[in-house]
Length: 385
Image: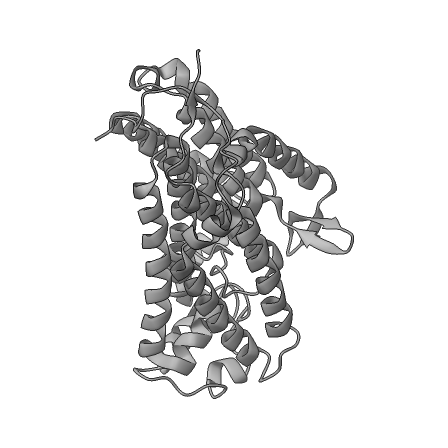
């Protein structure tokens, strides 16, 4: 079960006879429809967050979505073998952008996470998660079972995970750094790295956790303390999660009705257009509406995993696994955060929360996923080592 799914070495070759029309027919349009449904739910939530107005959240967000949707379809038309060839250059670009954030980044809410490019704020850490998945998939595409079992062979991919994670942690952005490492871990696991090696890493993390806690930023420690004892500061650090739980519970089975959520309309909900957007849906559409949203998200994760399972080449399988892991962790962390199950970490709900960088990065990943689906049966020509 831990063995990699291929034992050959490959280099890209391109089949020019694969027509544009045939590629369009092979796109997973059910997944595209799910993306549109999710964006529609997000539009309704952001429209309500602004008190029944398209500005400043809903209209810009839906405009960005449709632009990103076209970009997603365009990426789906690109031969996956070309994307594989660009994997490590993209990874290098991501590292450069993260270093640029460290040196020249825009400060917001006490953290350097954005680059100001022509008046537009770009968050390279969101792009880095995709680039890392592609780079690791490219590395293990060329690996035999024997090489995967060699600890020396694993040093470069492990460093490839730790370097961006460290740069993201420096911003500071603990939530995204943890997700980045989890994406890397999922690709390593899918490539056939043995379970016991992960057990050693987990044990080491447990050992250094107390030391790491002492070096966290003050606000990060406060988030952990608030998670453990939300009532210790109900009007300060604990305010967000307390109001979130009130909104979640007040929706009942069917909700209070669109534009009639009291916590939302009376502005009790914190960061309701970004991190806590799910609370608007739960309050106004109730448990039933929440289940619909969760159903759409679950179906998208399962379709991403299905793409990984159906793909004939190792690069596509591992890249799709990394993208599916990213989508799942986006959803899990955000939903668990607003329910008070984990500390607040500033992770948005994909295609629902307001924010251009996260939306664009997610849609780029979906574009690669669709390219994998379209080109799932292509072959990478065998090359000599």
